[in-house]
Length: 74
Image (cartoon, rainbow, N blue to C red; front, side, top):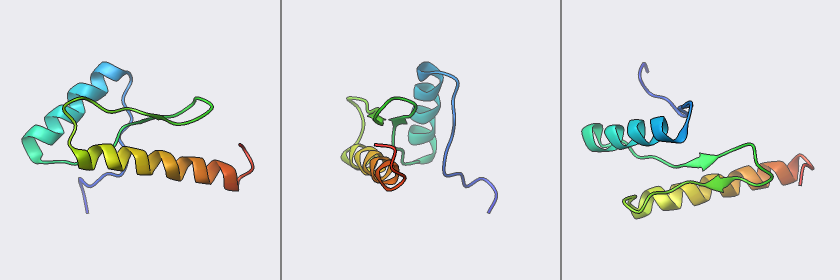
């Protein structure tokens, strides 16, 4: 269906924060924050994040670590 995305890539932290907050407040979107490209995934959360968002971020980081282990990159 049009308009349903799994991943949104943003150019920097500030742009991502603005976009995510607007999506959460205006449309009730749920989010998970993860920074890729480092040796390990970095969980990106805010003090204002709901518990579900924090849990989703942790679960996503865990999936990335498991994938890297399976590929032999750890």
